[in-house]
Length: 336
Ligand SMILES: O=C(O)CCC(=O)C(=O)O
Ligand SMILES: [Fe+2]
Image 1 (spheres, rainbow, N blue to C red):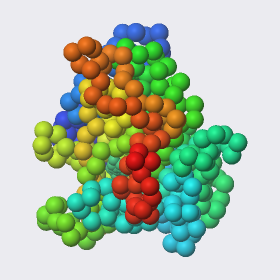
Image 2: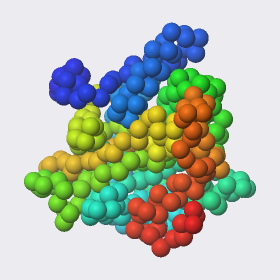
Image 3: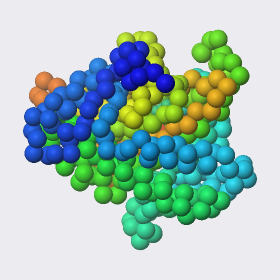
Image 4: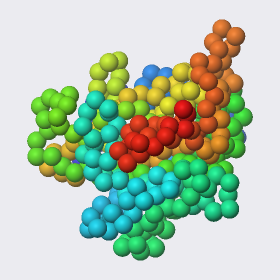
């Protein structure tokens, strides 16, 4: 395998060492890290993080968990199909999602899960909260492992959001207070191989691995086993290859709104792997569904008023899911 330096020579997306965020008294480190995150979020909307605290063995274990899920017989996967869910969780089969409306639906299958909310909570029936659909076929050990991982990666996401709050003039726990009933979603993805990639990636008759899109939430943290991810930078597509032990982090639409466009929710896409399966797991980090997306204190001034109107994270997510999922196409848009 190529060394980190060799891989990194081929991409300009910065690698940021976030180890120092675990000591909240080390102000110099917080300044250094939050400045690096700030610069990368302005220029690329993407960066890699290392020293995040999740060991390589754990990442291999979760990759193994992805393979176990997608290797299940189709009838077992369909038992937990996302269309059976009240809250957009469970298995999404190949072609069920179309992230680029100008292209064919995506050649990928997915599994989504989040926190288990109890039924007595007023947010339970808002279509984003509620129970997970776990694969019984894989037993409680599998779901227990994924639930633990969900909290481990949530923790990393909140550490990064604290660094962003630090930089943008908000209290360090600005996002923590909005995340008690987080609708964050952990998503496992499998990209089936193609024999030969189409010569013209813009061929509208061929499904992309994942069509070009921006993410909906605050930040996404992604681990990929093999290459395929590309991001748009200065009107060109550049590769964001896997770098061992790191996560790819990107800014989503909600943080773009919250930061008054200081940070970029960058277009990205995935090329189907050739002759090889590709496995990914990503956390889409988002606050509770009743949280209003406002403007961070350091991102507005009399000469730079907030460019958006207020919307709750729940309404925003529903409208985006309705745009991109075949099974939801006929549902009412809550924004209308
Ligand atoms: O598979 C990848 O590398 C990216 C997936 C992605 O962008 C997404 O699911 O939003
Ligand atoms: Fe994405």
